[in-house]
Length: 401
Ligand code: C2E
Ligand code: MG
Ligand code: MG
Image (cartoon, rainbow, N blue to C red; front, top):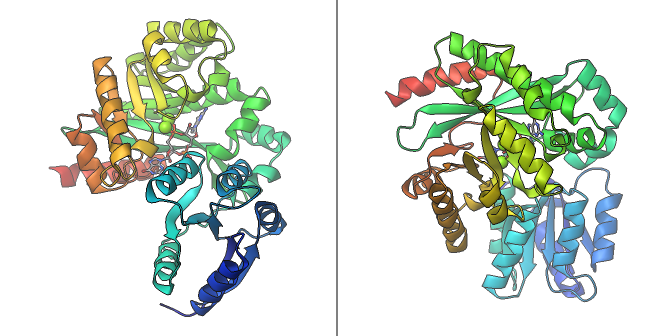
């Protein structure tokens, strides 16, 4: 292993000896900046005081006062974007449950470290860190940097670009459809993921114009693909905040009718976690959207709270199982059980079942074997700009033959 590691690590543990010991090992392994905190409050302070991101947090679970679970909840709320290693002497099942919880909260957990810690186990963790780290701007910094005015200007200046990520059929492996994902093409930061600006758009009454714009652009792109002889469909994400007006089905219908695209080729994806605020109104709007001919997908299935109820009432045509149930399903029994039951549930409702977030061949084979209809994820392809997608598709089709 190379000696100098230009990274910043924060170790949080209530045991002073452990702090000193782990810090010493990290320095021995070449880490040039090790911060320590003896309790949750000091840990939060250390993280907030850093202008540059802490690359790795090694977090003890059992601590008096604020325990590790509470601490992870706080840093998830603050959108901590560095990597996390859980550090504990608790039993393996409990540690696994805590790891899952942290992942569900959006933290980037790269492993667990059981006590007593050794040079070997720390080396293994640091090796995981040298995997390519996406060097885009830190999302927590971006979140604070953008205000609504800047976003409003960006919308007016048409700085929203679409990236396209293919879905393939699990049986034929043909590309069937493409999800259209919004990016803000920022002059300084490059392409910014929607997680950093959609909520600001929603909170400031801009989501309806935004979604109509994204839908129009997506449909225009599909129109071009269809004219070029590509047999594709598209999916466009719709926020629950969009469902605030009864004439939404007409607005979306109009956006499609400006083109030659048959409405049946357009599916709208709704994230189920937010369904149910005004259940009757949502049901009314979504049912009429279906009536117009759009497909309707329940996105990120399994991460919301009303899964069964929404399935019972809402006229969905597709179930999209969230990536947390796909990732590592070959390794983790509980994940696999949930994945398998969700696929069965979707099939029993007659829905097109998609599994998203497939990153490895093993996961891809498993979900196909479990009977899902379509697969999406980095293993197939990452989201791409339109011309990049066209080239990718050409290569993909050639290799499939
Ligand atoms: P989503 O609809 O669940 O989209 C899938 C997200 O997962 C995309 O992130 C995609 O890049 C990412 N992804 C795809 N395959 C993999 C994989 O194998 N591994 C991992 N780790 N990630 C994968 P993205 O583009 O950053 O979008 C995030 C979310 O933002 C979307 O989640 C969607 O809810 C929302 N979003 C995107 N575009 C729009 C939009 O036009 N309108 C609205 N309202 N929301 C949007
Ligand atoms: Mg989606
Ligand atoms: Mg999703």
